[in-house]
Image (cartoon, rainbow over all chains, first blue to last red; front, side, top):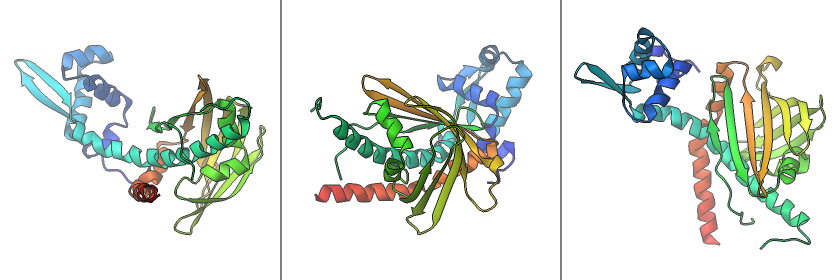
Length: 117
Length: 165
C-alpha cells in the first residue's frame, strides 16, 4: 500500500521506534520536553525533531506553560491505526472462536472419567 | 452448534515494524490446543474462521516437513497458504514459515511464525509471533484484515440466529 510522506501520515510517523517511545511516554499524561529528553536519553534537538513530526500529523498537541512547552497525545489521531489492526484482530478472533468449539469436543472426548461440570 | 465456554479475546499488537504478535487464551490444556493446531482434520474445522471453508489441509508435522492449507472463501475464491516446519516441540512450540500463495509470490515473502503454548491451571495461552521479511509484508498482512466490517456483519447474523433458537 502506498503511503504518503512522513509528515502527513500518522502510519509513517509511528513507524519510527523513537516516536513510538515518545507516544508511550505521553500515554501516561502530558509532559514537558525536558522530561521526554531525560526519559528517552536523546538530545533535545532529536526529541524536538520527532515531536515536530508527531505534531504535524496531529498525533501530539502542545501548549505553552510559562517557558515550558508541554506535549500530550491526541488519541483521536491514533484511531485509524487502532482500527487498522482491529480488522486483522477480528479475523483471528473468529478463527479462535471456532477453535474453542474444536477444543470443547476434544475435552469431551478425553474427559471420560474426570469430567468437570 | 455447541455453546462455547468462556473464550478469551484475541489480541494483536505490533512489537516492531516487521512483527505481528497474536495472543489468545483457551479454556483447554495445551496438549489439546497443540492437537487442534497440528492435526489436519481438526485444523479444517477452525482455520477458515467465518471467511469460508477449509477444503484441504496437508500438515507433515516434522522438521523440514511441509504444510499447506487451502480455503474456499465465501465469495467463491480459493486462497492457499503453505510453509515448512522449522522447529517442533510437541505441545510447546512450533516454528514454521508461512507464505500466502498470491500470483507472483516468492519464497522470500514468507513470514517466520513462532507459536508458543503456555498452560496455567488447565488454561492455555497461545502466542504467535509473526516475523515478516519487510515492513511492506507486515503491513500487507494487516491490510488483509480490512474486511473487518464484513466480518462484523457475519457476527451480527450469528447473534440473530442464536437469538432465534
